[in-house]
Length: 80
View 1 (cartoon, rainbow, N blue to C red):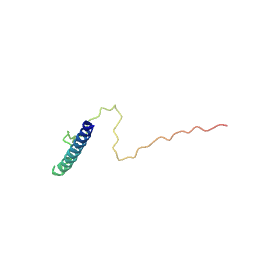
View 2 (view 1 turned 60 degrees about the vertical axis):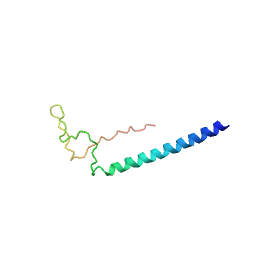
View 3 (view 1 turned 90 degrees about the vertical axis):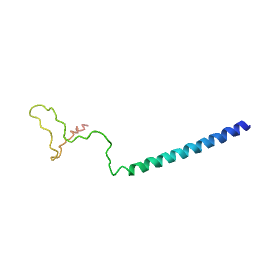
View 4 (view 1 turned 180 degrees about the horizontal axis):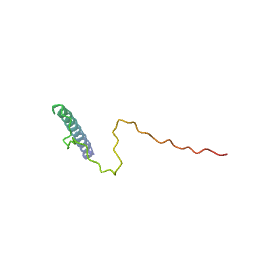
């Protein structure tokens, strides 16, 4: 019976230690975001020019100013 009580106490202590450690690490990670000088970049490669597309002759890429047109779905009439 005494070994059972010792196991419960040790598991409880381990749980408390791990919970405190996680809280401390999460607080430290949150403070690290403020200290980066307002730099929100992820450190990856930044593309400054758009990639060139190899389109077939007569096809031009959309300019982005015009709204896109959608085809209307043709709904078949119900025949009774």
